[in-house]
Amino acid sequence: MSRIPALDPADAQGKARDLLAAVNASIGVTPNLFRVAAQAPAALEGLLGLSSALAGGTLGVKQREAIALAVAEANGCDYCLSAHTALSRGAGLSDADIAEARRAHSPDPKTDAILGFARLVVEQRGLVPDQALAHLRELGIGHGVVVEIVAHVALNSFTNYLNHVAGTEIDFPLVQAVAA
Image (cartoon, rainbow, N blue to C red; front, side):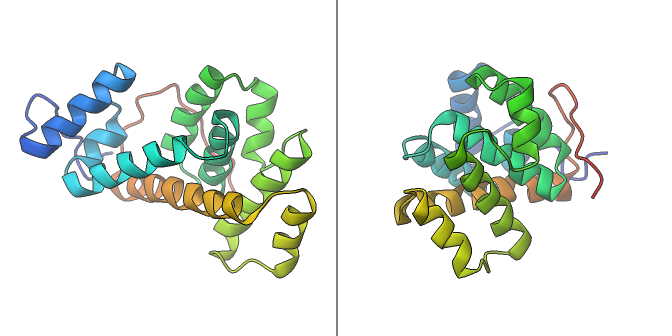
């Protein structure tokens, strides 16, 4: 049950209206996550800004979607698991890739390390051991990519937590987190 209502784009005013219209123009729909975030236009603007900035980063769309799946699973967010499962398929991840990403694994060694690190950041609240960074460096993953991984964890944790607090109605085919 929704505890913070999704703003109807037809009823939105000012900045919220403009941002929701931009979401709709960009992806053809206005998912409930964005409609909930529109209750605070500054939060929606931040969400969209960080998401857009990270889309232009070093990590490819498949890696970004895999991180989103790993973080959503770690945080138990059914909304984001549902949304990012659909988005991951659109980005070219197979069902097997999606299942592995949810477990923070990948058959590609670099992506596997990135996903494991992202999940560790969630589980340890950023207090990761030196060995975790050393492992990334051994694979040629530099400081800039580490910063991007942390930014993706933060972005996805924000949406996970917002959905938990709001009780956002899932408007994608349902995917549920595995009980911890």
